[in-house]
Length: 236
Image 1 (cartoon, rainbow, N blue to C red):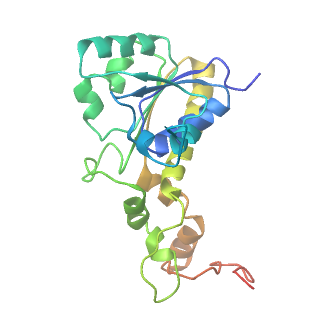
Image 2: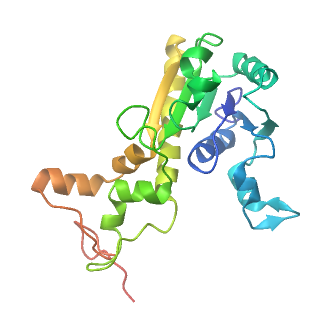
C-alpha cells in the first residue's frame, strides 16, 4: 500500500511544473487523471520518441490516466464537473483569469465539492501587476536572480543547467498539497493554494537571503565556489 492510495487528482497542468507535482503524487499512490486538449498536450510532440511516443511525456506523466476534453463546450465541461465531484485535488497552471472564464475556478468548483484542494501554479501569482504575464523557466530564473548568481565573475548571465524553477514550483505545489490534505483529514476543510514560479525560486535562495539581509551582500557569480564554505568548488 502506498501513502496516497485512494487520493484522486485532476491534473489540468501542462509542460513541467504542474506535471512534475502530479507525477510525484502518482508515485505516492494517488490516482491522477490528466485532462488534455484535443490532440494532446504539447509536450507529446517533444523527442526523443520511442515507438512513435514522446519519451519525455512518458517519463513526466508516468502512472497517470489521460482524458481529452474541450472545456469550452458544454459537454466537455459537464464531464469535467462530474469528475470534480469524485476528486480530492485539482492542479492547474493556466494564466490567472483563464479558469474563471471557463467556469472551473476554485469558487465555482467548491460549490460542487466543498472540501476540494485546488492548486494554481502561475508565473507571478494570482495578484499583483505582473499576474497576467507569461513566464517560462529561464525568465523566472532571471527574475528571481538566479542568472545573476550563476556563472563566473565577469561572465554573461547564465541559467542553471536544468529547469530548476519549474521543478521548484512543482515541489512547492507538492508539499502544499500534502499539508492541505493533512489539514482536510483533521478538519474536513478544503483549501485554495496559490503558488508561482518566481516565488518558488526565491524561496530556494537561502544562502543569498542570509548574506543580503544579514550583511548587505549582493549575490554575485562565484563560479563553482560556495558563498560561505571552503574548500567547496570544482577541483581537478
